[in-house]
Image (cartoon, rainbow, N blue to C red; front, side, top):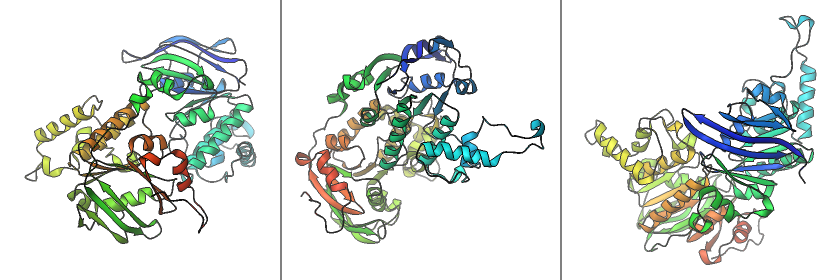
Length: 511
């Protein structure tokens, strides 16, 4: 049960360059609660969080902490008020140790005069860092440089830093996006522990199942306005989605009807040493075939083999009934296969290039038929893609990194659609994008299937697979363990096939 009032935000508004991104927002936070902040990209939730953390200053509005007016004019002032912001991508000093990062910004050196000859109390710094990590149940060597840590452990260090600063409000902005399911459970256990100690947590996420599992109340933003605040038990997912995007869940996620006809792809006993073995399946024209499994099950490895990024060591791929050797991506592209990768930032975009160049990167023959790029032709192709996929941008010459995650993902999909593929492999295509853009992606995926494309959809979101797919394949520990028709698919059936079992155990493969 949440405690008394902690922070009151009244009439918070913010303008950037004359554009109002927050308008008259009212939010109350209580001691000892986990409070979800929900909304589409651009709804204003991160801006509001940064105002609380002193990163931005409101154009107007007031903040009170325990009934006393406060002004949070900088992150240092926020820290003095006990407010900490943990970013989606952890912010740290990568070449300094875990211990140094935990105490950074708080501790002065000890010694005579505090000057150049003063001594740093390394033993007490290490002891304090260990104490705060122990409180979180995290086992880390405090002398390890941050650069060598996983994203999950970097987040744990940031939380430990917040505890060391005696933070009473901890804001977590999309903290689970890069984490595995086990790491998410660890983070949730820590968040609940902090709540039970009387601390307040703001949890910003696009994943409703996580919000429901963790949070006590939800506040919903849309277009910079506060739409409503409810107890988590007082609102269902349908209503949350309706308030966030102005549409019902039935409109947000639905299966498009398509004619599933001829087999276009056959995978026969495909294997790669150490990754997956004896994977066989078919994919038909107009079909959306789901591929489910836990992290590390081998789903992405199979996709990379099919596209020639990391070729299979044995087995066969047939496209339109013809055996096809796929040793490199160019082989796959020439046979009408396209691949939208899981890691958008590392493998999907050319970060230093413009949106225009990112859009046309896979079709050099269309923009440079004589060996020289025809700028006018490239521009026409890019403009058509922007219109077709409703990509929001300021200019085609804009660096792609300036776009939202959802619009970057649209650019990647548009790039591969320009190759006019027959087979489209989508690896976690909606990861890290908001519900409104997800709805657009679901419509696009359905329309592509209806137009006759064969789609392999890899996703960790089971409701997504259940809503969109004609069949669902399940992998576990590098093996295909189930093929489930749409009529028999459920989250329970999929998870039963996805959970690793001892060799020889009964897994119950569905035909």
